[in-house]
Amino acid sequence: MISIKNENEIELMRKAGHLVSLTHKYLEPFIKAGITTKELDKLAYDFIIEHDGVPSCLGYEGFPATLCTSVNDEVVHGIPSNRKLKNGDIITIDMVIGYKGYQGDAAWTYQVGEISPKKKYLMEHTEKALYEGIKQVKPGNHIGDISNAVEEYAKKHNLGVIRELCGHGIGTDMHEDPDVPNYGKKGEGPKLKEGMVICIEPMLNLGSRYIYMMDDNWTIKTDDGLPSAHYEHTILVTKDGYEILTPRLD
Image (tube, rainbow, N blue to C red; front, side, top):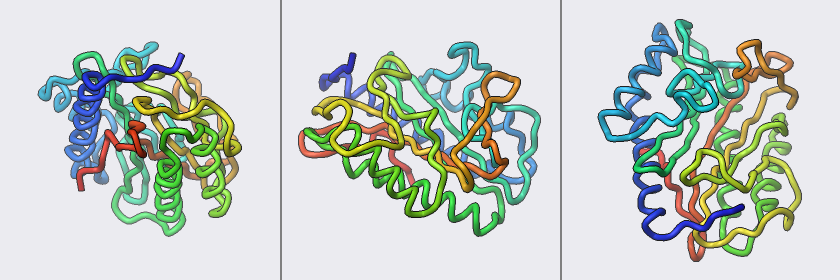
């Protein structure tokens, strides 16, 4: 069932989303060659706790960490470890933070030092695909309008669109109805209404769309070993459009 949030709930989600944005901004200077993904995870955990948040990924269906840290050909759900980041890597940091029972969720891909032109292209156009989807958010439009906008932008830029993973509704739970795929047809799917909150999150690959799960039962990788990028915002449907609840604090 798709829930419509009231003003009190929306204000709590704004605060959760702002804490997600603050945590991303806090972590960014640490994302350098030589740091381990486990060290980034500890930094995030401490920061979230200090700011009265809850690291919602930690323990979720058994997930063992605060952050999902997915490097290069890892698409999503990478588990923080003693792996050291190297110059030329890209890393997606995906986090969900709870605040007084409500959730905020955002994923951004970061470069480590100097990266290849192909990785820069992938990052640039995956982020732009996210904003193409966001532009479709307003009451009366459909989920399919968002999905189609992401897919068409990705296809135009020759990027693989993962179909097995998608965005979602969000509220008191990390994952709520409706699903928000990154492919689809205009005018299809649930209609957007004021007070809905959804996560839009293109996951695009430099190569094909195909993926597989590693033996840890969490980490998803590209089948062809080529890099993947992932950008996500938590979006409120407003009376005449949208509000990004997880803005980048640049």
